Image (cartoon, rainbow, N blue to C red):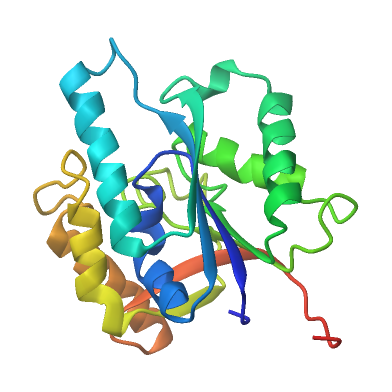
Length: 227
């Protein structure tokens, strides 16, 4: 992963970023990158109770404070109903965000997840980062999301991991971050249990010779000699 300064992290749902790239987020924070978190959807009533909505909002605030994001952008598309909106709506909003922030690096959920809203997030980034739109974007990474990337039919949707980030020194903090999502933590062998997060990180670490790692698919890396 190349050095970066201005990073946009896209979550289809709040919690994607913690479980998918929490260790990398903390590494970027310590490298003093500017971090902007874009959450595309919200939970809503009556599908969720008012108490559950309030709990979720509190969880988001706690995660934002834990990471130390420089900015948090909230969109209002309803969780589990994002496929009901024209893709042009997402693209127009994303282009506005990109023009305002001009990030050099973007992270999003990947194209191989069974969760269609993760794929909408990835496709929105893809459609909005044509070089003619955003030549300032030098790196794009798609992260894995436990219980989505792994639970898809692997023969049908395969995650093509080609970048690894060592998170050994951040694994304990990542588990704490994920645990802030009070409604998302499961019991082992659920991949979102504390043990599941640790084992997942260890598995990715073994793939690259590290104690713990996170893996990404990188559809765009631009090496600019002028920099």
